[in-house]
Length: 150
Image (cartoon, rainbow, N blue to C red; front, side, top):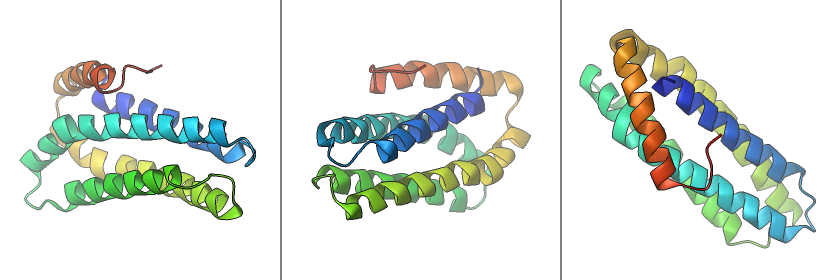
C-alpha cells in the first residue's frame, strides 16, 4: 500500500468514526466520549505520520511552504476542536453542532489534501518511494496508536 492509499484509508476511518459520533444519541455520553477519544487518537497518529513522511517530502519539492503549513494548521485546529469536545458534556445541541461541523470540516480537509497536496507529491515521488513511505507509515501508525488500523 502506498502512502496515498494509507492516508486515504485513515481519512475514511476518521470520517466513519465522526459519522458514528454524529449519529450517537446525545444522552449516550459515554459512547460519545469514547468516539471522540478514538477520533483524537487516530487523528494524532495520522498527524504524526504526515509530519514524518509526507510533509518532509513536500518540502523537498515546494519552494514555498504553503501547502505544508495549511495541513499542519488544519491538524492543529482539528485537535483543538476535539479537545474542546472532550471538555464538554457532549449532550447539548451545541455539542451536536460542533460534531457536525468537525465532520464536515474534516471531510473538506481530506478532499483538499487529495486535490492539492497529493497531486504535487505524486508528480515527484516514484512509485517505489511512495510504497516505501506507505510501509514505513503503516508501522509508525501502529506505534503511535496500537488501538487499531484496519
